[in-house]
Image (cartoon, rainbow, N blue to C red):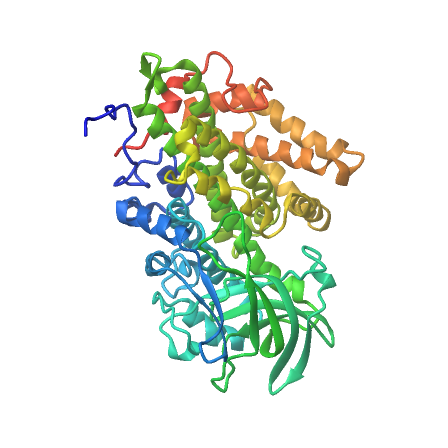
Length: 543
C-alpha cells in the first residue's frame, strides 16, 4: 500500500528525564528549608519516577481502575477491592522511599517534612491517585499520638517501609496503610452533624453507621468520627478485630469520580464494627484535625506537583512543535503564556516547601507553629485553586493533542479540582483562615511578620504587603469578603517567597504582573518588559 503522507513535526514523548534535576526551583527550595542533605537521594528518585516504566504504570493504573468485590463466588461477603498490578507497583515505589512515613521514622531527619514533600511532589506528577493512601498514612500519626497505647502499637507499623497489600490482620503484615472517613451523607463538611454511633464494647467501641467518602477501603485501619456517649469522638477502626476476625465493615460501592480514578474511594457502612477511641471523648474534631492538617499540606504539594507536570509537558511540546515558520516556543505570545504559567508554578513550589518547613519546626518553635496554623489554609485555598487554571491553560498549549487520552494532560485536568475540594472546599478553608486569626491572634501576627520580612526589597512588594495587611484590618464584613482577603495575603506571600528564595527574573515578572496590578484575568498576559523567552525556557526539561 502506498503511503498517504509522512509523519513529521511531532513532539517526542516526554520520558526518561529526571524530574528533580530538571525542576528550576525545587532543589533550592528544599535546601532553603533545611533539606540539602537529601539532594542526592532526590536526584536518584527523580530519575526513577521520570522513567518510561513509571509513566506507563500511571497510565495503566488509571486505564484499569479498582474493582469492588462485595461477595465471593460462593455468596459470602468479601468487601475487598482489586487493583491493577501497576497500582501496586506505584504504591511499592512510594512506600520503599518512605513517602508514607518519613516524619515518623526512628531516624527522623530534622527536615523530614520538607524532604518527604519533595518526594511526594515528584511521584505525584506521574500518578496522583495512589498518593491518597500514602498521604493519609503519613498524616494519621499525629492524631494517634493523642493515645499513647494506640500509638505504641500502630506507629511502628506505619514506620515500616514494607508494602504489603495482602488482606490479613495488621500484626501479621510487614507494613500498614491508613485511611480516613469523616463525611456522611447528610453533613459533608459539617461533621458535627454525623449520626454514626459508638457504644462501649469489649475494651473498645461498637460503631454503627456509615461514611459517604472513605479512602482507601483496602487500608488496614481508618480514622473516623462517631457519636460516643460523651459527644463526637475520634476512633481508629481496623479492618480486622483483635480476635483476628474481619471487622463488620461493608463496602457499598466505589465512587465513580471525575479524576483520581486509580484510587478507590468508597461508601462504607459499619454494623457494630469494633474500634478504639483516639484522644478524649467528645473531642473528636480536635483530635482528627491533626490528620486533616497533614492531608491539607499534601493538597498543596499535590496541586503544585500537578502544575509542574502540566507546565513541563506544555513547555516540552512547544519546544519541539513548529507552526507558521518557527518553533512555538520562539513565538512571542507563546513565550508569554508559558512564562506566565512557569511563574505561577514556581511561586506555588516555594509556598509548598515553606509550609513543609513550618511543619518540621513547629514542634519546637512557637512562631513556626503559629505560622503553620494560618499559612496552611491560605496556601491550601490559593494553590489548589490556581492549579485548575494552570493545568487548563497548559493543556491548551498542546492543542488537540492535549485533549486526547493518549496524552497525560486530560488526566491532569481531571485531577486538578480534587485538592481544592478534599479536606475542605474553598469556603470552608477561607473561614478557617478567619478562625485562626480570631482564635489565635498570634498566628496572624506571625504571618504579618513574615510578610514584613519582604519590606524594602521592592517598592511593588512593599505596596502589596501594606495593602494585604490593611485589607484585613479595614474589612467590615469579614465572612463576605473572606475570599478576596485570603487571595491578597497569598499573592503578597508569594511575592515575599520569590523575592527571598526565587531567581531575580522570576520575581521581577511576578512583581510586574501580580503585584503591580498589570496582569490580566487569564494566563499569557504578562506586561511588556518581562524576559518571557528566558522564563519560558526555564520550564523546558532536560531530556
